[in-house]
Length: 320
Image (tube, rainbow, N blue to C red):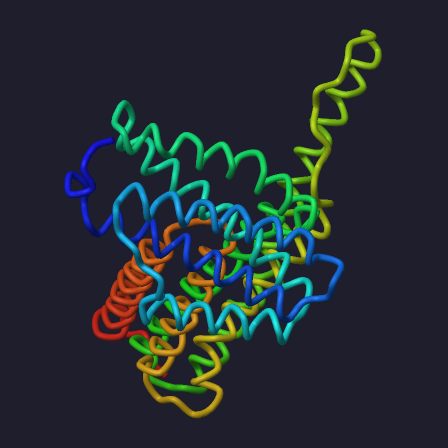
């Protein structure tokens, strides 16, 4: 086995602490859940205990205490599960599964043909088979990728588009009343447009799949067409509602009396961080990268929209 010193010490520390975090989380969840899922959690605890011991031996590094960031994360997740009950537990377990698989696959791809890559083979087999079966059986796939995509799409579009509109209207009109009227009507129109677009797109997809199924039935062939996971109308409502919820965030400060876009930018930025954190965690995406990307998008949208508003006011005579 290659010497532990040959590896990035940060990677070694992260792998061990991540396993320790998962183990600590499963133990904490066992203490706040009903007995019907204790057998599943006990099996997960057994697996994580073995993984933790393996990495400690592999890197010759014995870490028994979580760092501050992971302790805070553990406390928050435990509190959320305690407050929201079994649904939150299901979501957390599935999210942990997704993150674990993505993390180990990335490390394995970077160390193929090396001792660390070989060591990861057994861990990944556990993640793919044993833990996946256990967690999937428990959660019954509570995380619907389509719903996550729709919620994220709607919220993100509502935040960015209406924040840009608020900034542009302030630049052009300088009147909170005018901004409120214009932004509110734009938000409602945008929500209806997003919902209608989602409905039409999924309805078209549903019709295409139905035609393919009918064709295969007629020809006597086995159908390999997967059914739609979510009805078009339900998806449209999710997208439209999420858009409207996101749109309310930059409009709300104006409703409370804000006379410039600063408070709208602040509230929208905080909302982006919160939404990006939650949805990135649930879908297994890189949280920091997603937050940074959305903040950059908002910054660009606000700058361009406000600039257009100023140009409209000074050169095109747009004003109250």
